Length: 352
Image (cartoon, rainbow, N blue to C red):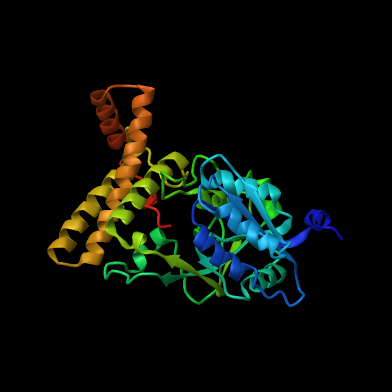
């Protein structure tokens, strides 16, 4: 059987990796990916989508192909942004399941086997996820409590399985999906994906929300886990501030229905976000005076989210030039007086 013919065959799982200029991490991840133990239960391929890298990414992938790993494929995607790369990989996937593995993951040898068994045991779900645990490459600072894990893409929802769906919209990180179900809801939004200039994207959360709206559900299984490298660059307050500001911008672009439901709006920002910003400002001051660095910085990060959201919406509002600032403020005051209710039904600042 020729190499080309093997590529045309279907497999059970596509391990999808989107990468940009991290060929050293990519090599280590591929080594753990190709060491997966199948026990003869399933077949898998590794699809690497190179999102415009200028380092040795292509040569790194080619070295594995040349070594005889004919289940490895290389695809180049010139449009910058992770969502473009994800959609390209989704289109090329030959597995009825695909699982996202970033280039800085370290995978236990039975990771794919557990994922495959989970889909067999739970045919009712569209996606499966578990724990994402840190592989520290530098000493974490004392303020980096689990509240700050979303920034470094860590997740641990405890040791009990649960379903995620329209009633419990948890952002399951590094999911594995039924390929057909994600294709059916349209893949990933290219407006929400991270790129070399923007971090804090929401493309993963938004595709889950579309699955929930389509009546699909996912499952969290704590026995499924892997390790995610956390480099020194992600352990700085500067990085966390930048991430939360970017996350706020992406959330404003996403226009999540639950988050947007305040009737009163100022510059197209829901009124509850102004109240939350004031609450976090007070929390930051209180915890700063109490010298609780971790809690004070958490409140600051929530303020950064609000600021990113405000910036994006104010820019959109200014571009539309619907009305002047004074007229908008008067309209906002009238809408507050007329609504007066709704506080209990308004969304909180999202926790990814």
